[in-house]
Image (cartoon, rainbow, N blue to C red; front, side, top):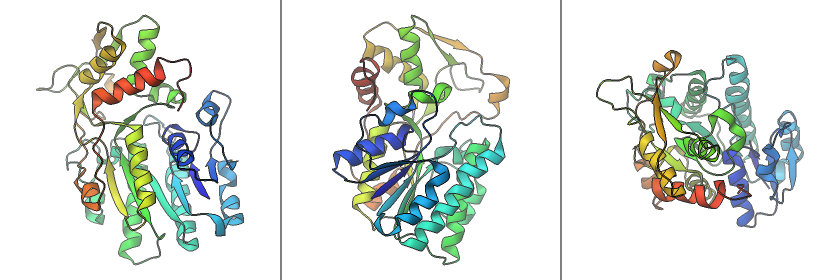
Length: 328
């Protein structure tokens, strides 16, 4: 049995799809489905069970001897969330309790960290695991801080020699895009937003740059297709000796303008892009550059090349967004 927290979410539902393709017979999603269309993310899956998050630990205890691994993707991922107590409850406290449970029961755990832990990138984007390095990072929002707080807890437990799961891997996801993100509203990828504006007949807007030396639309991000992320996690599942904290991106920064143009090329229509001023409240919290240093994961043995931005966007647009059924 394999548990996926956040299983009806963006990355979690893609993990479930991959596990089903691998013919894993008992896959369990832990999530709330709510009142919207989020249920469609798992509509095709042959699930063994669906567990509400408040019942997770009771379910784990009841099936302790049957569980091989937990993919912990469940979190509040909205970078603009202002209720920090809620963020702590969901992103830190739940993760810490799950770590304790997996360590006590010998269950493997692969969890979602975030590139938001790097803040403005003053210290670069190296996925070092030392307590000193993690303590020096300066996330720009409460979401990024909560993810770094848990990474630091893991580092402290290791330094103290406390028990850990037999395999424990954290993944610092960069800017992930791909199918099944539609429930995320404003937090969807730029690809999905551009497609929606295209379908509505409108023009897509990008932020102007407010930093000298950076042109409008030339802010850089490491965009990574969700299928690449899932492939790494399936590789970790097949290689239980690999553990640690790893970046998960493409390893190549591209501009938002590159991304927007790739969407319009995939659609086969002329570009319709305008620039607007960035809101004042975002200007001090905005990352102008992210790029995953992927050397650590490569050294660990993962060798599959990342999907190029152009190929990934074309796949997402033509196989999902432009179809009657955009779900994976």
